[in-house]
Length: 87
Image: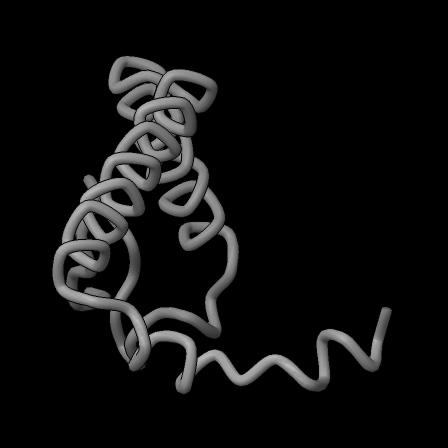
């Protein structure tokens, strides 16, 4: 089986294909990729869940930043969602 795969020359095979066969083949490949993307997006998170997840992650990062001083700017502190100079 490995010898058979090793003996296949994909470039040579592609060059041997006529235009009449190549165009429908490429259209089929594009269509199959489009179907794959549709399946992936339906199986994945929807936009609403993505927005909720993004909001949650941003909130967690801000909370973490307020507790971790070494991420801040020198002479500044985290207040009301932004870095402000220390008094």
